[in-house]
Image 1 (spheres, rainbow, N blue to C red):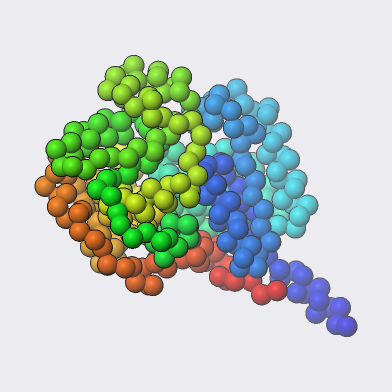
Image 2: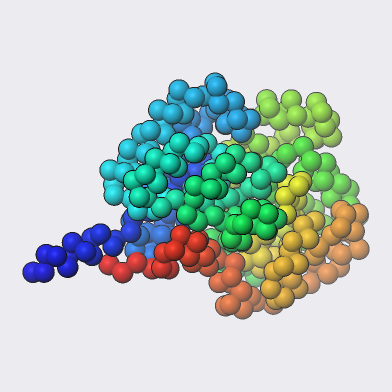
Length: 346
């Protein structure tokens, strides 16, 4: 046995850690895809707690209230990452990780990469990490241009693929899924008024992490009170979401104000074979085949005049576009940002 050769192979073996907030199991899906590709991979929740108070404090960067518990939690993650022989850490949409944590990893010759699912205008704490990183990427094209990051569009998992469903007919309805920020409630109300004479209805899958906090937000935007009965405080199962997309003509997308990146909803709705109805002009950057499946509105008042188009059936997606919308394509691009091959040999 060539012991020297075996040792070199073990040194070359890459091991990945993903660190970020726990949101709707998206990071776990990335972890599972990396494992399929031959990379030992573990996910760490960057928050010490996912209580409502902790989430709010982290988002508002009230570090003085959290410092002791945050630092203890990050120290434990750091210890585990090092003990497992991790070679590459991907920070996914981080809002907790600080320069001290990244410097500690880099001092151990661990490569650190970043992928952001929010824009700097919505979550800017990652900007202080950029000079310390090996790889930098984002779903937000404006941030990529301004901060020298690599643009990587998001993805839809296989559960959303129309090829995985047995759908035969679609109902005259649109689906709206999303965290019900106050501006979304206002847009949703306008959309419902816009379609009320068309024979279409809007199926609502609405999430907010706390009914009490939602009620407080409604004091500023009273129109949002009408959706209180529909708001759910647990995340929707992806199979439930996919089923709603499969049975509907179209999916309504209302992106976050000040943010141009294409949401997961963009990719999930297109891969499900539904029309995408959106206010986000960044969809014009998508391949031509996908643009033909999108109704881009400059204002919700345009929706009634476009409903006739949404009644028509869409042709099947090409295999090329199904791949473009997939987690597999996303994983290829994310690994490339880290300088890693798309698959690791055993």
